[in-house]
Length: 171
Length: 147
Image 1 (tube, helix red, strand yellow):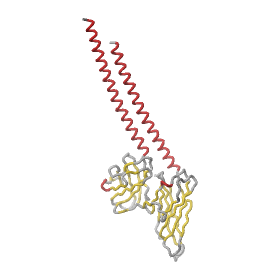
Image 2 (image 1 turned 90 degrees about the vertical axis):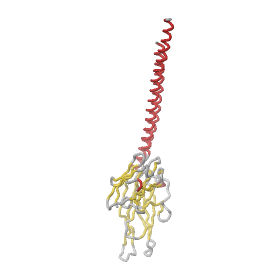
Image 3 (image 1 turned 120 degrees about the horizontal axis):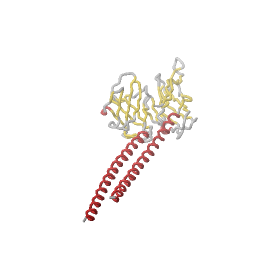
Image 4 (image 1 turned 180 degrees about the vertical axis):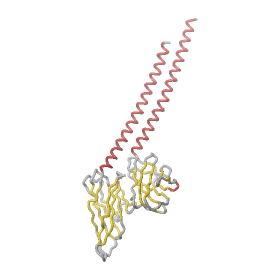
């Protein structure tokens, strides 16, 4: 009788230890996995909250009054944390546009450190439409610039682009 | 005679007690495995959900209308890829579910930093509208735009 009780207790005790071990390993793995993900989420969140692009300056090249297009250059400065322009996307007048080296030129930079600037150049027709460029960064935050060509004289020979609006926003 | 029957009783008691203990241990093993599998699966889902994220990067004032479909650009801003098909993505505009047959999504998988195209064949009146996109993990994003 005494041996039966001891043997049964031993079987249940060993099974309990094994069950506890299995549960412990499972909880440990899950905790590690979630902790890593939370850390990655925090980093992404902090990066998006601390990123900030601003339009520092605008210049343009007008080939002449007899040419109907002009080139506008945006100097965009990084007033926030380090960003990677290689992961940026551009929405030009509503349509996704890849930098192509002619109508949309983006300065080649792997990183944009805090305080650094990047040059983005685009070509546009001298019309009275409001044009827009959205720079969508890797954090999901975007810089939107709106501009319009305005004539400075009644004969429409001299003109320049004018910034109509700019906004930095995050989802 | 009495001695022999006592030994047999002890043996029967021993075997029965071992069987009972074995059954309890087996039950404990099954329940523990089930719990451990549940914890692992749930943990993996939570961990993946935290790594998956996306953003709608359209110009809210200028939504392209190509071939009768409004085009929205979805950027993967998370650290893990996700499926981007009409069967794994749910789209609402102004609270109305858009049938999967009215959706065209490319490419089928969005890797980190990639931009996918979501085409919605529908008619919208001029004014403000709200788009809600829900992906397979349950993560959703809202986007208010103007037509």
